[in-house]
Image (cartoon, rainbow, N blue to C red; front, side):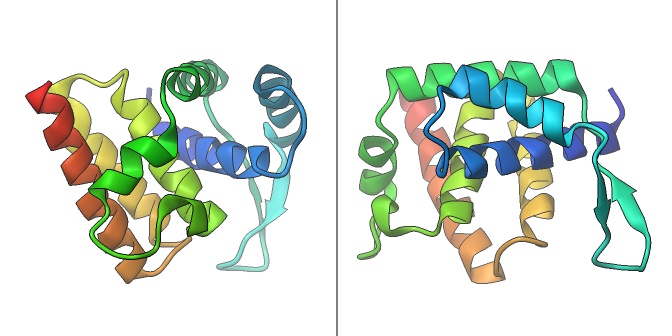
Amino acid sequence: MQNQVKTNTRLAFIQFIFSTFFSKKELIDETKDFQNYFYKLSIPSTKSNKETVMNFNKNYFNKLSMIYLEFLKKNDAEKIINPLINFDRKFKNWSIINKSIILAIFSEIELTKRDKIKILINDYFDISKSLISKKEIGMINAITDKYINEKEKN
């Protein structure tokens, strides 16, 4: 799969997770609805007066969505993330976009080979540059590093 398509799929994955915070549907149904609505959707570009087509790999998106469902079934995100935080703002008080980004990263780490994790994280941080501040990216980076180190110990 081309790098840009994979990046676009990860962006769609973050957007999907973000949307689930507002939905009362089952995640399986939400996955189908998201794909049906957003795949090849033409959206205004922030960089020009042109429109951009939202293009992502449906198979990879499904794979990410399924691993996200499994991750949520097996884990309580707050119980994983809060011990990794060295400041007062606990996970439940984070912005939804920050939650979405870190949940996307943690989910995809579950299916990524160890030698490819750095590439995965760099791609998510490149995506995040257009969504959140550098300070927030730094916070997510620090927590992700701690998470990976804890996983390697176990």
